[in-house]
Image (cartoon, rainbow, N blue to C red; front, side):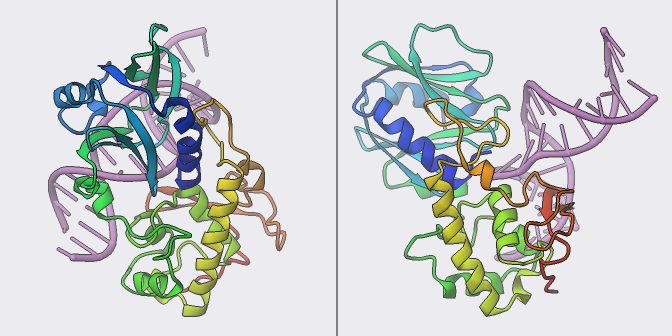
Length: 276
DNA sequence: CAAACGGCCTGGCTGC
DNA sequence: TGCAGCCAGGCCGTTT
C-alpha cells in the first residue's frame, strides 16, 4: 500500500524512465481509472511530452507540455512500469501511454482502486482529495505549532486523525502505527487530549520516520514495487505493523492487534499511553 | 461543519 | 477439493 515514502520512490524511479518522451496515444482498457472525462483524457494527451514528475503527499503529478498535469493516485496497489508498447496486456493492466519511440508506460492495478485525472497545471486543487490535504512531513509548513493546532480541532482518535490527511498529509496505515509506537501514544488516544509536549515528540518522529523510509526506498509488505519492479527496504525496520503477537522491542509485552474505525491497528498495550 | 460509514475492487487465506 | 466468508485498506460520496 503506497504511502508517501513509496510514492516518492515511484516518482524517483519512474522519472528517468519516461522523462522527455512524447505520448503518441493513450489506451484505456479500464476507463473507470480515469476520474475526469476519459475521451478528453485520451484526446488531450496525444502529442504531449513528459516534462517532469512532482509529488504531493500520496499523489503523483505527471507534468506535461501544454500546461497539463495528470494527477495520479495509486491507492492500494497501483503500479507503473515501462514496457514495449506492443507487449501483450497483462490481466491487471488498465492504462497504457504509448510513446513515439515504441515504448509504453503501463498502469497496473489489481484492485482497480487507483485514479488518474487530467487537469490544467496549477489547478490541482480542483481534485477532491488534494483540496483537503494538510501539510506534508518535513515541509516548512509542518511545524509543531501546526500539529498542535490541527489536533486540537480533532474530536477523534489520533490514529483516525493521522489517517484523514487533513492535518498531516501522506501517512497511511503502516506509518501511523509505526510512529505512534515510536512516540509511545496509544492509537485510541483522543487527538485533542494529547499534551503539547507529546505532540512535539510525535512531530519529530513523523519527520524522522518518513525521511528514513524514503531513504530505504519505502516498505514492501504485500505487493508494492517501484517503477523498476524493485521492493522497498523499510519492512525490515517495522516495529509493530505485521508483528502482532510478538514481543514489543521496548518492553517485551506481546503486541496486540485491534480495529480502529475499521483499520487493522497494531500497538503495544503496555508502553503506548492512552490519553482520553 | 465534523464524524461515521458503506462502497469500491481482487486475491489470499481460513474454515467447513 | 470446493467454496463461502472474511480481510487487506485509501479515499469518496452519503448520511448522521
